[in-house]
Image 1 (cartoon, rainbow over the protein chains, first blue to last red):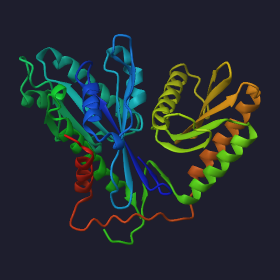
Image 2 (spheres, chains in turn orange, purple; image 1 turned 120 degrees about the horizontal axis):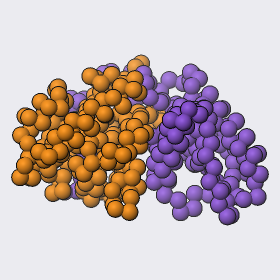
Image 3 (cartoon, each protein chain N blue to C red; image 1 turned 90 degrees about the vertical axis):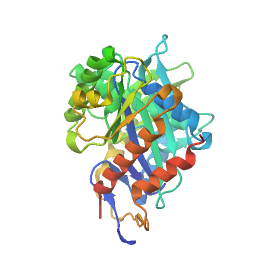
Image 4 (cartoon, rainbow over the protein chains, first blue to last red; image 1 turned 180 degrees about the vertical axis):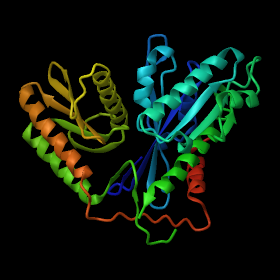
Length: 196
Length: 171
């Protein structure tokens, strides 16, 4: 979180976190495709030769003025593959909010739980109070035949009151509501952080 | 919230105009002293704060995110190998020019491009010094009080952000 009064900018960092192939990059790509090109940056993607995220994807949105400040929202994804745990920690640092993109497929239950727990561990290691940190959960790939009921996913992940959204990110479904919800949570926290 | 309330952040970074002017001056001096072709100052999340020198065709937003990512990865490598120290500098040598990526305290990172005739040891020393000065400017209490009119009438601030998101969404 960063306010630059000279430029009258409010800068927020939101990270899309989750297990491999859950749809983090797809979310960012859909946002990139859906936002007015004059109000977003180009998409930065650091990928492997196999087209998997190596380090991060990055997209910046510049919203219209809100109360005299221009909000810049930086969206990052982490690499999902297990091998890149250290890189995930690096990208997560400085985040003002996290979208956890869970894969609804039955075969990915364990991967979701491991990723969720690792995310909590990283955030706690940065001194972040997990209970008060803005997190939104997206249950992606609701269209797969083996999709686990969202109530089961919520229970297994111990979502505990964090806002949850169903999505089929490949088709753009649920992408904007998720982005709106995390922005709402982060802005709520900005208001708490402001002091006279 | 009332119209005339004045705000700063409890955590994170708040840069007031006075600090901003000092940063501009410091970077201008750094550019002259090295001399550097181009300097980019970003916060640790990759947000561009300011530039000096020839921007050319650089995509500043993309560069900003990569500088922050590059420095964060170097810091993590240093932490994992037990050799972490503040104000670290990463050097990339090129044929015609060199790139330094330098930490400037807990909040900022710099990219500095210099010609290949600039002595690297000299550049490294001056950049490190500037990094320390920038960190000092951002950690000292500012005299000026920032103002943000948070009065949103009937609307909640979160609603205004949602509306702003709707405005940039094309579909």
